[in-house]
Length: 264
Image (tube, rainbow, N blue to C red; front, side, top):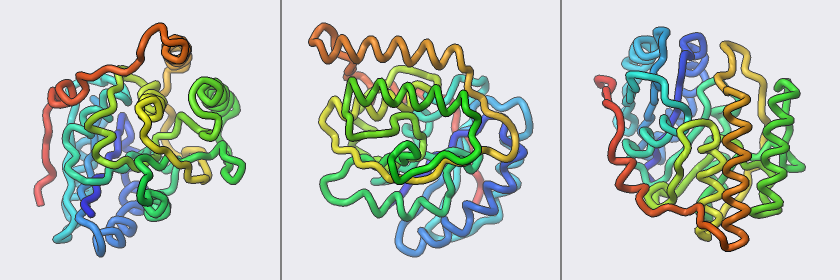
């Protein structure tokens, strides 16, 4: 199995030492049975995130492990970073996750173990009855929980969490499922459009942790408005008034900002 791990970053220089310390042992473990590529997407950071990534990962050498950095000249948002990462990823299985340790990297193998036959997406779910939220600010949890509750009503009641970046996808999903938003809404949009296209999703109950370094880049007002607009479109889709599914995604993801590979 070829595996791509996509990690978006924006002004995360403080988190990179922890990122390397906690991610490297898991990559070593996975490289025993997979060919691994890690795609970092620096979404226009104004600090030294790009240089620090280069310094941190150029000395990690393995025959089954490679790294690259894609660098946006300006900040475009999480959705744009994911689109860029997807356009670069070569793996049959693609994992996306946060850089700040909100979800533990050592859970990637367990996440992958849920990607059984006939399963297309595994999504981490702190709002599942067996999951937990630990230390995250109340207003952020409220926004996320409320959004997920509305999507449960509109889309699939069996899915408890629609806003988690920590996921595993089969390549076909990434190639065929469209998403339009460049911001944080993209995380929910990918999952919902996949469900509406009849891809099978399962949840991986887990813990969501408070970040310990840096600060969240979520723009709350913009994110709330994006969710409300998309929820309206999903409602219209359910009523048969207007489809939320587009079919030009594969063409659009081929247009992405410049790629800089980490030398091996």
